[in-house]
Each structure stands twice: as C-alpha cells, then as structure tokens.
Image (cartoon, rainbow, N blue to C red; front, side):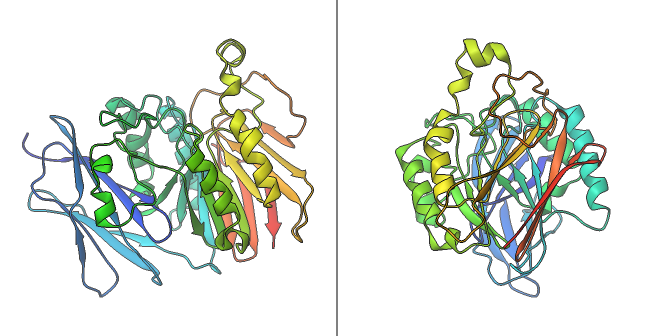
Length: 391
C-alpha cells in the first residue's frame, strides 16, 4: 500500500548489559530497511532487521544492536530508500552519575488514565530533563493479540504525550496480558518477542527464534550502581529457577550497591477481584514467587522487589534474618497504577504493608553511586510515598 508510512516509530528496549532491542512497524514492506547506529564522530554500523508480517498493512521489524561500551551517547535511526526516521540519541550514564528510572506498570485497558499519568510524568521531569530508563513492570495492553490494543493502550499515548520510548530504553518485565506464553510458531507476540541471552547472529538465526517457538524474558543487567534481575512470572520453569539462583549468587549481583528483582506478580497480594481470587483460583497464580523465589530473595539480601499486577500502590519494608553486613531489610513495592481499572477490594491481609494508595501513580527511582531514592507520585504530581537507601 502506498504511500508507505510508519505505523509505529521505533520503540527502544534494554536488552541486557550494553545491548538494545528496537521495534518499529510500517504500512507496507518498506524495501530493505536497515537499523543504523553509531557513536559521535564514528563510522556507522548497519543491521538488517528481522521481519514479521502481521497483516497486509502492518509490517513489523526488529533489530538488536550492541555492544555499546564506554560511551556516553549512542545514536540510531531506521534508514532505507522509501522512508526513514530521524536520528535518535540515547544518553548513557556511568555508575557514579545520577541514573533516573521511571517505574510504571499496568496501563492496560486504561488509555485515558495512562495519558494523565504520562502528563504527570512530563510535569515531574520538566521540559529539559527526562528519565534515563523506563522500567515497565508488565501489562502494557489487555489483549496481546489485538493490534488496536497495542496502538490505543501503549504506542499512541506514549507517542502523543512524551515520545520517551524513542530515546529512553524500556526495561520490560512480562505481565500476564502482554505476551503470549505459548512456545509455538503461531504465537501472538506482536511486539514483545525479544530473545534475552541470544546476542550473536548465529544464535539469533536459529529456526526456533525465526519461527517464533522460542522466547525467553528472564535476564539481568546493571543500571548505574544497581543490578536488576528480571523474572517471568507467567512461565516458571526449571531453567528460570536455575537462572535466578545463579544470578543471585553472581559477582555482579553480590557486588552491586543495590540489588533489585522485578517480577510482574507480587509475592504478597492484598487487593483483587474477590470472585476471580476465590472462585477462579487466581490466588494461586503467584504462589511460586512467594514460596520458591521470595526465600531466595531474603537469603541473598535483595534490597528491593518491584511488581505490578495489583492495580494500586503498596510498599512494605520488613526485616529478615541475614548473615550479611547489609541492613537485613527487604522492600516490596507494588506499582500497578499506570492506567488500568483499580483494584479496590481487599482479598488478603499480610499485615506487612506500610503504605497503601488506591489510585493511579508512577514512581521516580533515582540511583547514584551509594544512594537510592524512591518517590511515588499520583497523576497530579503529589508525592504519595518516599524512601531512600544508602550503601
């Protein structure tokens, strides 16, 4: 269909340490597009993207580029003879610098409220500043296989209200709504089928990747002086359990100033739909996180566990036994308030949460060397919670 145009301009994702994943979409097969990336005053690298036809007017392209090391700025653009994007610039921060992380989750099925949250985010950071990373803790859309959901609930609000997703990489945590858990070629992962741990061309060319029957979301990476482990709550497996134990004990995690785990379903849920909770066995969805993973979090002195899923805000800082010289506390935060219908009915009481806020919100997480600052704000920009850690 001509003229060919972009349906979705590039969205940028973190893809492990020093790698980025880019997805974009056009209304036609746009010739032979290339993803170009480069440093200041340096030659350009060109990558041929992977192509997936979603339907006759939606043609999706994805590419992974890197490694990007020891550099403060990196630029990229999509380029071909039919249509190209402008140049986008990613600002990379060092460990001793201030790394500003925007934390959101569960904007699905609530584009009007999501736009209000995005307005609050714009006002918080101001015209001359922006976050360095977006941590999205899952459920970006309601229906993973719906093109209109992706456009109305994620891409259009982000484009209209901020455009952050072009230059601020998203650290994506899979939810129960926004990725297809089936490992089959016909999976409906329209935009989120990234392949963590597969960085070189040979591995990425494997049939299991190209036909869609392989995808793995759990991974880890560093953001400033923090090490972050991302878990897939929906697809527990022996492989993920082994990965978690290995990462928790790794030198990168144990030597980090701040140790963070993020997983969509919280270990301790208190608010939900009572019918689904009691009659549809939804109370059991996250049991493996509480019973298997959480003891490991405490054993290995995790500082902060960030989740979504429950559509409101809660935070708890609790003490636990530890043989470490660290503080012996762990903080659990639920940040599921970026736009979805709120959960207002209590179904459990764990007698642990210090703060509960039953409205939409976002979190500004600032990490700089030995300091971590967590500030939760509602859509109007009013602070609803704050805590800080020093190491």
